[in-house]
Length: 434
Image (cartoon, rainbow, N blue to C red; front, side, top):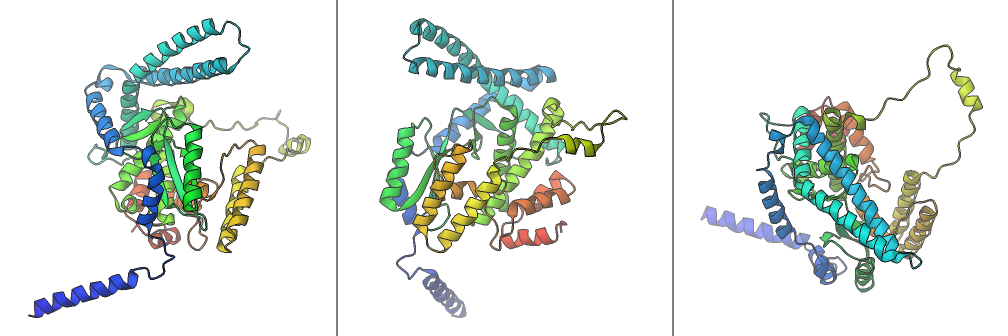
């Protein structure tokens, strides 16, 4: 009887707790209901994660039989990667030339030139597609080796290993409430969307649900294998693959498991992924592409060098440069202030006026709204990034913590097993590992 009574009390207590936490104010938004309302408009454009992941994993299993590292020497693997990236850039150039040709009504000999361009484009793109699986495997092996060199492996084995697959493009739909900056939805969309489709979906959500929406192109997605957008830029490619792999690594540990539980934990995840990518990229360059390492600044030396004072005095005053980071930070602070006062229309008018200023200074932002900050605010290393509840600069604190930690391995093991903001705040105050 005591056991039955005890269970009875537990049930009653649970019911009381549930009653207490249930919203009693009709104005409180049910996140699940809100997401379903958004999906009523986005569902037709949503990306099929399961099909893509299964297909990508099958491709990786097939690639693993190639064993490129077994029959290509170090230098040839490196040259294969660089050749592929050059091809990717050549394909992009030819695509742009063809688009310009087709849109120019005054072009002479258009048909002949178009035929020639298409033939060259098809030839180079076919070769690029043939090389892509081999290049992916080479880069995966190089990044895995870099991580082993950074001492993150167990018994020489890295888990999970780096796996990625390139795709032409990728989009994400970001939705935020209008009265605050918060991700109400972040969902991946199908590839190949036209600008008309993008604008139409944004307007449908905003006009019918009174929310702020933005569709953005993204560089990568932390699926497994990671989805990475095609590029001819080695620096960018290695950094994005490393960033997404870090998400794969963290997902198997508390920090990644609690991704999205609060804006601060999301920001911490994204910032650590960036800091990790910096370290992996640097080690990969050191091992395989040393010419991509930052060069040391050349300092004047010897008796023939003029004194530093004379250099300063004779240099013309530098022109005032538009500081995107500082200006975006100012914008975010003002928007937060206006929204906190309930001035939604004023905040939106202010963001549009600031967008025009950014555009005039060469930063071609298509839309600057609450959803923009809800997306970019997840990255504390970016302008407009989020801070802690008491205004703590999470990006600066995490960078300082990494600098104070003796090694990449210790930093990753230190942060991966934290999942609450107060745990990180304790680290910021006392950065030494337990």
